[in-house]
Length: 121
Image 1 (cartoon, one colour):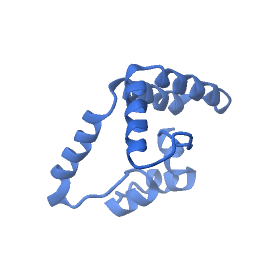
Image 2 (tube, helix red, strand yellow):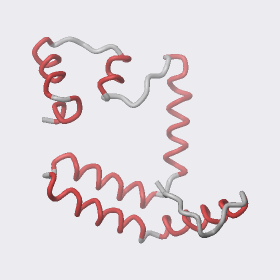
Image 3 (cartoon, one colour):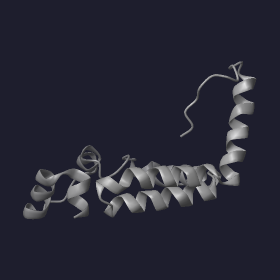
Image 4 (cartoon, one colour):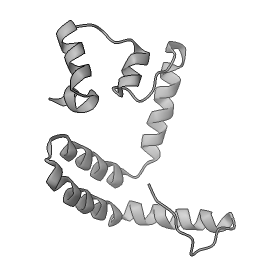
């Protein structure tokens, strides 16, 4: 069950058996939402997130969504291999190569050595 994987069996039982409704802060504590925004900032924050998605690499977003969707129902043993495959697919896209080149150009402008190690997320 999706909810059990998200919040654990005890919390899931609590919610399903009592039928209670979570407040926003508790939903964040449980990990059901990533952030809580005041009502008067909601649309502004939604626009900020939309701008981030628009600026992201379309092919990387697509591959990441495939990977996330796969993890929802996959067994643990097959997850590692699938993660490697999806990571390799992402790294083969023109968007990824362009982003990598842009990253290294920016890194060199800040005086970082070209042989330093960086984690690209």
